[in-house]
Length: 439
Ligand code: NAD
Image: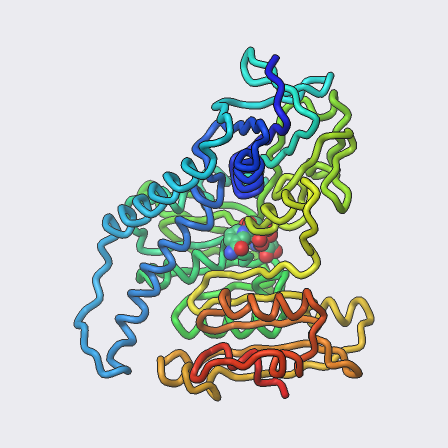
């Protein structure tokens, strides 16, 4: 049996960051994973999709370059080169993670929790006063006939060539990102969504505006429709059947992507060790990420709180005793243009009976947005009528994922819209002026 100060199971953003920090601080840290360090985020999620998004956006900008007086001729996609670039960016960042976790003892293998609270990997056994479970999630699939004829987000990232057409089941974050990316590459994209609007967790006005922008670029949306089956003909063309507003309908596509959410991945042996999971399989935790067994913590996708890489990292720091505010975590979707949010949406504020007002700033009124040909976008804020305290900020438009950081700080500190313009000054011309335009 090997004794350490901390055992971390899962080397994704929920695991590797705190493991490395603790090891650098002199603790004996055992970090366990059966795959490349970096987790879903680096290997099959955030980073590779952002590489594809960047290539796709370059194609979109090249097509629009004539509007800025630049002629580039016909835009061609060399998808092999796109994929090579994605792989080399991921490989480079893997080197970075490997260097970061070098002070940890990395154990390659599948960890299981043993009933006595030790951790087994093969025939090795480890023990520590603190065990952090950060085992993540995996794509979920609808239980429908022909589900095996679809690919999930992992499959999209493994495509070696672009299909002519793609149907995407689910207009959540993954569905919308791939819809935007593939449309930029010239793929005919149709998104089929069960709900009446895309991007369920976002403010409806932002979701609708993003959908309208992507529709103008040629993405087709079928809303309020439940996919019931997928079939394939002899040439491999898929037919997607769905119950839509007008009853049963079908559409055809070369590739069908299932993007209907993710399910938890957890180590074996939880129940026997007294670590409870909920009915969906997520590990039950309290506000400090403690599980039902003392000394065991669960962070990130596997606890079902918020499936975002940066939330996992922040939760891990809380689990290890740091004071990190988890109440104002921003979220972003890397479509073109991006959308981002922090704090309350209009729908949440209404449901919670919160007294609020809204204000909006249009990208079209911002000098930098106009100058750079990115004038289609919107910043919407929710604020308290009496104190003008910022309650929520919602952005659709260029660089939304970067702009949201300042709003997140303001929501976290309980700042008013006025404080955003008095405690600092924003450079001109810049998109950051949008956040400071609510005087
Ligand atoms: P999601 O839960 O965000 O969206 C799934 C969508 O599928 C929902 O809109 C749902 O209504 C729809 N759906 C379910 N059943 C359906 C059916 N039968 N027919 C049609 N539509 C159906 O899930 P996701 O997009 O797969 O993403 C998974 C998780 O990964 C999310 O929690 C997300 O936050 C996270 N993620 C985040 C980022 C980011 O931060 N940029 C990127 C990728 C993934």
